[in-house]
Length: 188
Image 1 (tube, rainbow, N blue to C red):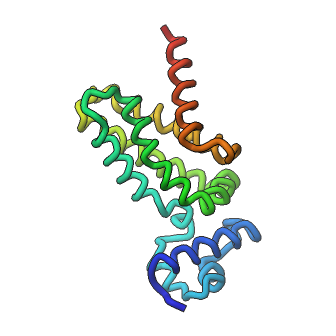
Image 2: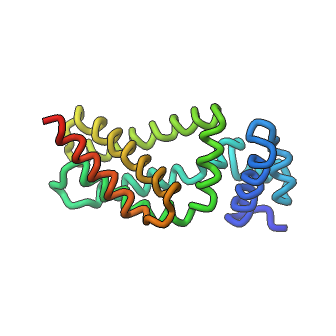
């Protein structure tokens, strides 16, 4: 079997998800994942720093896509609509990765070490969005608030999409931002 490339990464991820589901995350050693995928441990470590990173493999791609999408929205667009537009640009990425994401979400919910990693990764995304908003001239105090609120709103939309796959993620995203707007309007 080939030992490099995207096909190996995908085999490793599928093998890991199968084993995590069968035995639990903490009870699954890297050597078992590698064996199930038909590669050596050394090959595993060429692709992933550790088994936790397998579940967060697309974070760099997501962060880069979001930052580029924020930069690309028309100048003068307010921060939250700009972020909503940026999140819409990520929908194809989420749709493509759904077969790996769905079981990963369940594992994260069940595993404290993965919850911790998930929160750290989310904080990195919020920081990147904050920087992207500041680069657009958004007030330095407002940018982190908007980035955090938008990230949480996106998390609500993706959670709903996982629970209701018949409703497209674009629609879930628009609905979550509508609800945010209504909730914020009540503060007046």
